[in-house]
Length: 145
Image (cartoon, rainbow, N blue to C red; front, side):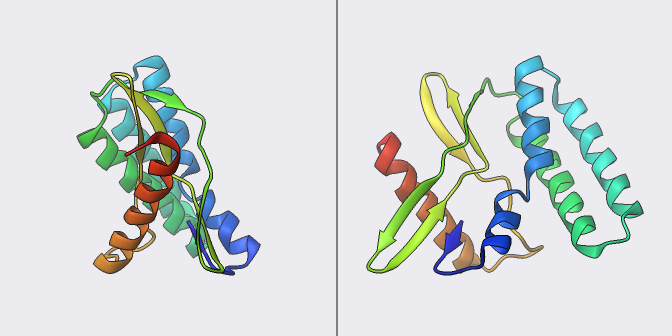
């Protein structure tokens, strides 16, 4: 999600933070790989993070590993069809918010969006509430409540 005038590089980094996890989840659902496979991918990402010398890349890999472990625990057994990732816009006065879920899926004929994680170990609950509310409002404009 981008709020206000965050520079383009920062916005791109936020958009692409969970690419490894999204790719693994997409493959998991396309090929019915299973929760254990997701946990193995998470372990591989943790190993890459441990070997990474750039702190920012290491954090990104660790975040992706954590997202995969949580996904394996909470969603791996669900029958999702992965859809193309949408980009939505919310506007409040002169503030434009770009909202992009990590995953856009169909389950039992119902479109849903999934947020894989947040950018800190212990995100501020208010930030989580704002992000999820924006995601809900943006999705509701397109998918319905």
